[in-house]
Every structure is written in structure tokens, then in C-alpha cells.
Image (cartoon, rainbow, N blue to C red; front, side, top):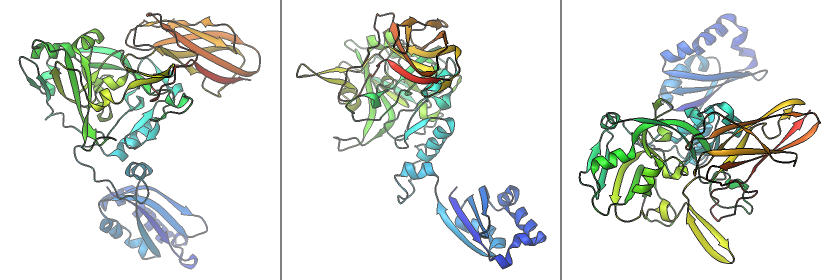
Amino acid sequence: MPLFIVRHQHSPEACPARDPAMGGMLLNHLSRPSAARHGVVIKGEAVVRGAHTLFFIAEAADEAALQAFLTPFRQVGEVEVMAASTCAEVVASGGCDAPPADISAALLAPADACQEAIEAGLLVHRAYPLNGETSVPDLAGGAVMPNGRFYLRNHFDIPHLDGERYRLSVGGLVEKPLSLSMRDLRNLHAESLVVTLECAGNGRSLFDPAVPGEAWGMGAVSTAEWTGVPLVEVVERAGLQPGATQLTFRGADGGLVEGHDAPISFERGLTVDQIREAGALLAYEMNGEPLPPPHGYPLRLVVPGWYAVASVKWLTEIIVTDKPCEAHYQVEKYWYEWIRNGHDERAPVTLMNVRALIATPAQGESLPRGETAIRGVAWSGAGSIARVDVSLDGGPWREARLVGERRRSAWQWWELITRLDETGPLIVRARATDMAGRTQPEHAEWNRLGYGNNSIHCVTAQLI
């Protein structure tokens, strides 16, 4: 419903609060049940003491309904009604003077999605497209991240799809084109996988010199348990024609991008061999619940081990071809671009780099002297974590204890229990090594678009 700010002012001589009967009547009229009978929702009210002024925020179907509700206040003073917006709506629409966005029924309202992300505790980078990261200390919450605190990365508006009418089409170089409903997909063999997804730009803000793109800190990473149909089973059900080696995945999200005159859909491509090796999943549940709209409802692709750009959300089409995908987000974005020995070099963004993050202590946290637990998570796209090493105050690397079972597709908890007796600054550094023998570098190699920053994580705390 539309939002309004109401200002009521009366003269000191006619202050209704001095008349118990009048004051009681106005209080009862302003109550939530009374407002509801008039089709009004009171969000909050406050009196400016000494100024004989009342402000409140209200939602109403229209201004006429609100004005009717305000009749008793108009009888004892002046009333001003101002159309208003939430902070999230103003930011999502592009500013205080921008008109309210005309949101299609096929799109999730950006202001609502933004407000939900803020209330869940995400650090929102922008409201359109909605991008927000998890705080690094929040990563210490458990094996999986609650859906509301799972980081968000979008390139366009968030589609609001009807799960009952949804169809996934599988076509191109197949023997039997498919059009699958959610009921069809749920009737197929299901698997659940715990998978860590990380934005390829995670850590971009730490590159020096600065690079363009979303200025992620280190929280554009989260883990969830995904449930759905193994992608290879759907592909095999359609049947591959001779020479069919490439798959293009098309999402329902799209819009205008620089360098293109017409709107584009979000598309990414993988080979048949790559989806087999990764164990890709067509996921319809996240942590035991239907996918939330910001995370791809009703169906998304989840590609274990790969940077999350490969895990296309709101998946609507799988197109089988004999040529690599040439979509914008396949050939123009998500490439490492380096300058090496005076020459330009580039390589596609694929598997996640090996990385460890320190969840506790947090940056700037004060710690008591004595026994201290250093804890965090580590992950890699090339294999499970082999070891995590921790250095304190520039001292030698000490091997941390890995907690829980090793999973190739999900982050690994680790901890180092140590005794610290000296007060003052404490510098903690952590680096991970995976089963493929890859170890985090002191400094990740700078690249033009700021992808894959897996520099050693460093936190400074204070012992008191």
C-alpha cells in the first residue's frame, strides 16, 4: 500500500492532551485496531515534546481513506499529509525525486527485496540490481548459511515467476525436445548437495589499483544444501545428437547492457563433459525450502566448484549445440585479463580459487588474554581442503585443525586454539592449501576486471 507521513499540529491553548476525554478519544482512534477498520496501517508515531506536534507514518490504500481517518485530528488542529517512500524504495528507484517504479507483475519489487536483505543483515552494495554480501563474522554461523543471509548477486531485476505455470525447455541438438514442469522435475530422481557458491568478484575492493565492477569485500560467498535433479539425467533423457557437446543455459532475467542496443537475457555455457565432472544440479530447494525468488525460484542451476556465475538462476532454457556459447556474460565478461611481460593475456573464469577466511576474531575485535580460538572457513573449486595454516603477529605458520568431514564442493571449517598473553595488537593471517596442491598467494595477481582475488586474509584484533 502507498506510504504517507502525517503531521498534526495544534495550538498550545487547545492542546487535546490536556483534556482527558479528548486525549483518550484520540489515543483510541490512533490504535492499530481502529486504524485497521479504516483501512490504515500505523507504522509508528511520535510527539515532538513542547512543540504540540504529532508525526506518524501510515500505509493506506489511497490518500482519501487516510484523510477520512484523520477527521478527529483535523477537528482539533491542522493536518498535513505527505506522500512518502521507504529508504529502500527511494534508493531502488534512483533517488528522492524519481517517480515510483512501475514494477511488472513478472518482477519482484526491488524495494521489497532490498528491505528484506537489509533486515536479514546483508551489507547491501546497491538496490538495483540487488547485490549484497554476508558479513565475514556471520560466516561462523554453521555448516550452511540461512537463506536470508546468503549473499546476493544479480545483474538485472529479479524475476517473479509462477511456479505452477513454469516450464523448463531442453532443445537444440537433442533427440527428444523436453518441456518440463516443476511437477515433472520433482518426480525425477533427486539429490542433495552441500555446495559453496562464491562470486568471481569477491574481494574485488582489495585490488590495487582499483578496478571497475561491484566493490565486494570478502563476504560474497555462502554455502547451502541444494536439492534437485542431476542435470546429466535431464540431458540424457533428451538424448544428445552426434556432435552435441555444448550447453547454453538461459535465465529469465535480462535487460540492457553496455555495448548492446537491445535487451539481452542472462546466459552462460558449459560443455557436457564439464557438467558431468562437476555433478551439476537443477536445484529447486535451498536448505530444505523452495528456492527464494532472489536465489532463482523456481529452478536454478548449481555447478559445484565453479564460480557462481555458472550457476544460472531462474533457469528457463537449456540449448544443446555443437558450438561454444557466445553470450555477453560468456565472452565479454568473466574473463581474467592480465598484462604480462608487456602483452595482453586472458583466460576464462572457471573453478574457484583456493581461499581461507578468518571468521573470528573479527577485524578490530577486542580479545581477553589467555586461551583463544581462531576460527574460519576455507574452500576451493579444484578439490577439498588439505590444510589451513595460521600465522600470528608475523610468526611462523602453524597448521590449524580441520573441523568436520572434507567435502570437495563445500567449505571446510578450521580452528586453531592457542594461548595469547601479551596485550596489544594481534595480527592474524590464514592461508589454505587444497588437495590439488594449490596454495593461496600473498597477493593475488591483479587483473582488469577484478576476478578471483584470493590473497591471504589478514585480520587485526586487540588483546586486552
